[in-house]
Image (cartoon, rainbow, N blue to C red; front, side):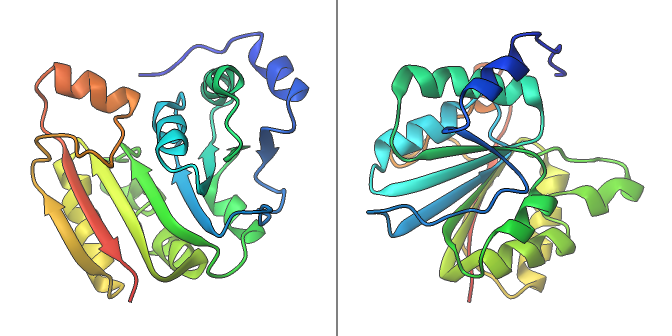
Length: 206
């Protein structure tokens, strides 16, 4: 589902550096916050905004590489004006160099690009190279939460997390009902209305 470029997106982002940084800018601790979460692939922002309201004690960073998509998320941020969100325009692999070791308590991977062709698997967010980056920035006992509609990606991710010695503390295959501490993404809402299966796991760093 490719989104057409919007002429207003770049000017809107430029007007609000307080909410949108680049993937080269440092990820800084915030006064009054001791718990940090990262969503890789923020989309139009429903999940990160919902979680920020649900967990006001947590500071959320959300990375999105598509300018128009993050501009839609920014619009919602400007309506809600949360004090615990920072959007990041760019790529996770590049942004990871700007993140200190053991910075995040939680990492959320929601409906990531499955890169279905075998030759593209190394681009997946749960490829071993990317998981190594996540492991470095995740605190001890930190958790990775993954949701996807793609069973092949789910099994691939599960295998790689086990290979990285993560403790798989929850598998829902399929994930039938949204839990009270979870938030639906735009994709998830669409898939649930279409009765498409969703898969979810929670992995803990050991």
